[in-house]
Amino acid sequence: MVLGETERFLSQVLGRVQQLLPAGQLQIRKMKAVYLALNQCSVSSTHKCLIAEVWCAVRDLPTLQQVLQASSSEVGVSAVAHRIPCQDMPPTLIRTNRFTASFQGIVDAYGVGRYQEVNPAPYTIITFPFLFAVMFGDVGHGLLMFLFALAMVLAENQPAMKAMQNEIWQTFFGGRYLLLLMGLFSVYTGFIYNECFSRATTIFPSGWSVAAMANQSGWSDAYLAQHPVLDLDPNVSGVFLGPYPFGIDPVWSLATNHLRFLNSFKMKMSVILGVVHMAFGVVLGVFNHMHFGQSHRLLLETLPELVFLLGLFGYLVFLVVYKWLCFTAVDSATAPSILIHFINMFLFSRSPTNRPLYSGQEVVQYVLVVLALATVPVLLLGTPLYLLRQQRRRQRRPAGGQNEDKAKLIDSPDASESDWGPDEEKAGCSEDDKDAELVPSEIFMHQAIHTIEFCLGCISNTASYLRLWALSLAHAQLSEVLWAMVMRVALNSDLAVGVQAVLLVPIFAAFAVMTVAILLVMEGLSAFLHALRLHWVEFQNKFYSGNGYKLSPFTFAVEDE
Image 1 (cartoon, rainbow, N blue to C red):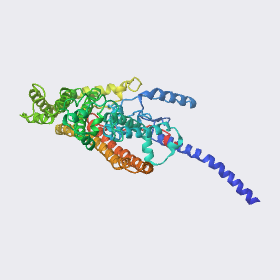
Image 2 (cartoon, rainbow, N blue to C red):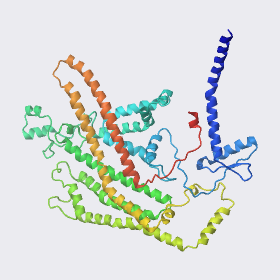
Image 3 (cartoon, rainbow, N blue to C red):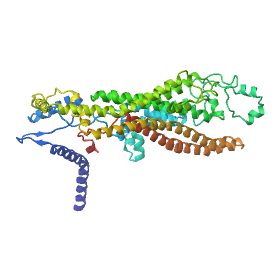
């Protein structure tokens, strides 16, 4: 009896300890974190207080001062916060929420931005899902992705969704809003391509009349039954009635030359999107130069870069749009080749068989090539010569003036008060000062690398955007093959209706599994990686350095876990 009572008493004690132990462990971890932070403080000369130098966001300074005053008033010790000048580059703090966290994560994976540098994340919210959708455009596949992401968004507050430890699931759940926009944009581009599980849908009346081709060519009904897919010829009168109101005409899915038509359309579309995307990245660099006080880079770098990019590849976009607007489907057979014109533009030659698009075209092309070539020396020598000139001016300036300015700054009684502005929290030395400290050979070498990278990058990056065309065609053709090899075989079988209905169940199940595994997961991951590369290499390198570091504030979030 004594042993039994002892065991029951011990079990009660251990049960009580088990209830109190997690809270005690959490409290100990918090105390350890607090003491670890206090150990990083410096002790004053009087050994009566601690001094800590920390980074704090300007917006949070009033809250910090209020908390210090409230906590120090309870113990009778005054705690004060002063803003002091600093020559170190401050950390970067970008506030995110559930929606923007995944897009900011894409940018931070490339590199954390410098303090007050232009953040590409707000623009990535639109451009990343759109470029993904250009490669993944399908109404059915995009709708499945959208519904999957929507289910995660609606259930995001459930504890079971957050408690799942599967790494793949956590990746999908963390990027649920990214998947939501990717699926939504894919539905939009799917309507543009007129593809839903590789099938075209007739929303509006077609702009092509195949009956006119049959009447003029004398095709019989038996021939049309054996050859339902025809080569659309706009030169036959009455065949082309007008453009389709929205997207690709569904009759192209029945034409033998539909792949040739889509090749031309998607290739030109990729070049247009690529040039616009890169030019937008160069323009964003203007805000960095203006904010960091590098106005000379606007004339010596940004302007030559825009002239080089738009003078060559922007002109190519102009030729594409001009040909679309000025040549109809009837004139397509005799329309001049843009590619030949673009090649002759660099060779300063003229093709006798390829007529010009407009009068005075050769003069315009020669002027643009000369201007683009003239910007290369400016881009190569402009900034180094300017920095060397500034360096010589600083060397000629007497050293006493700089020491007096520093003494005034240090001895000023208000130097550590709260009347500093946000701009004074920048890095102490600007880019000009850092570049001026380099030797001339390093300055010229750095600028030569930048010039070669940009000029060659304009060519390679424009070609890199052709992946939008390649992956879009690959996705469409893979979807077409999956439909033809699986579903079409079952739907075109000559079996009885009952047997065919029974066979459709496993065949459709196999079609659904392969659609999800191949077209959604594999193709979606491929399009995601290519869109990621377009943002990192082709877009962000035009203006984003990404050589900063994140602000790591003190928090109990880790200890709470």
